[in-house]
Length: 119
Image 1: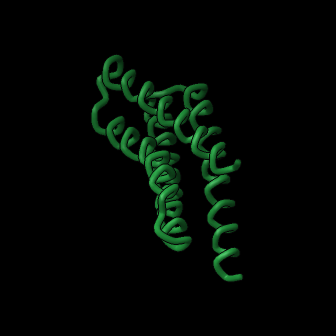
Image 2: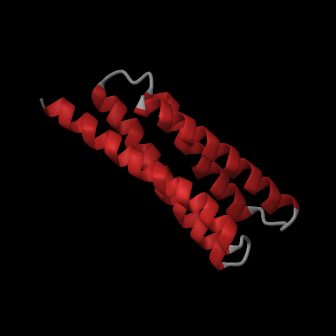
């Protein structure tokens, strides 16, 4: 069940990232940061989906760990977009909160799987 929640939340987050990236390009004329944000923000869900069919538990942990790195990178781009004035505090918080939830869920999933590998 938690995998489904993680999958659903990461997909919803990816949609939010795509929409914000579109606004950044069309309204703010920002092309570089928005592309980095788009890449890392959508990679999270893609890697979670890839982990569904991992070849082993270690492969699963590896893919989820990469998703975690991408989620962390996305937090960086969100902060940078806010601190450079491309997005306001409300837009930042909206994305930041969901992204932090994904980070927490990924950490939990990785820890649980690692502990099951050692058993």
